[in-house]
Length: 415
Ligand code: ATP
Image (cartoon, rainbow, N blue to C red; front, side, top):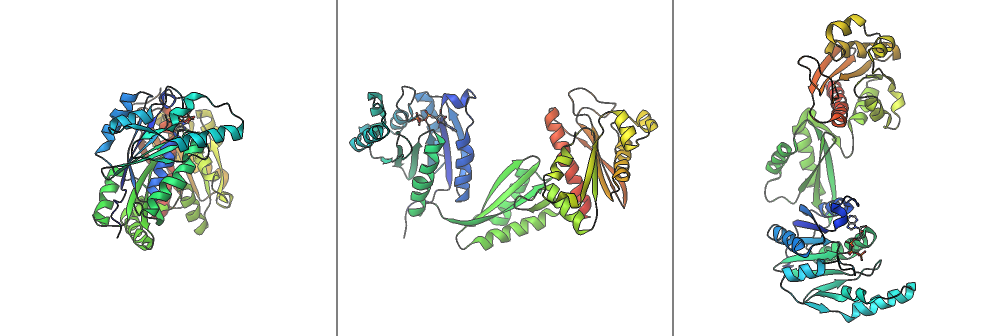
């Protein structure tokens, strides 16, 4: 029987001024989060600190009681600002010991590539007493593996081309071999829209219960919440069952399995029913059409769109009556409905969708302030409009209006 503790919670600390100066995107976060999630462990927190010894120790203190494993990236190189090794040794109250094997391998590497060896490289030969060295086949700074109080602390070099193979071949491989991570057979992902992440998480926790082998991980992006149900080898059915249960409980808020997005769902439904679609966009400026055309084979259903930004364009291209605009304003339910009807007629489609709104920062009319967006849907059953009030800056309003438009159409098609 294996007595080693399962790694469930992981804390990550990135060391590097360049990350905090905005000179480098922190790609390690995304990579490590995906990697550990894939094996059922959860990234509890991610801290980014400067190349300052006390700040690295402070981050370690912060992480320590919250996890089974701490991964520290960067700051292992040969220069004076590479302080991770010293900071971790001091935090753990361990001496740094010199490793002659590391020196030999480093000298061999320099000789092989014809580099001049400088004395500062020897700094990389030290590691905290009782730790083991993780060879770095793509660089000079080795990684370090330390076990203390049932926790693992792993130090990895900053460059992604060095870190990634070390995580794959040495960190994950070792944790799997020790039984501290469980190989995951796979996962089932569901995509939802219209329900908040925290609400979803509390419902899912209830469904899964405390003793489950299935873990749920959440990803919120562009107005949708993805939930990934992972299970160890032989238990994928349990993950599938949980996903199906949640999908059914979500009802209309369930968009689809895997990466299925709104546009795919809409086009699939319209195609099955033998319908066609056109769009008339004002405030979304073509983004609804762009989302639809991204789907391969969209042309069988999606006929085209008109971006009618000015009032003159709304009138000339979509047949919106000047009186309607004058009476109700261009951002109104009445105009949205005429836009949808107009484009449907022009393009000869059975369905259409339109958008008109105030993306900001200026604009607004009466009770309709910045962020007010009207989305109208025209179908054989009639023309209906929905009003949204979206907060955020211009780009956010446009992006959300696009998602809301697609989501409104998706829901209408389900009914
Ligand atoms: P080196 O031996 O290259 O000095 P190191 O462990 O000291 O390795 P750093 O000096 O901290 O690593 O970082 C080296 C480079 O790795 C950075 O300039 C940056 O390009 C890249 N890097 C570091 N951290 C990250 C990160 N979180 N995401 C993406 N790239 C990173």
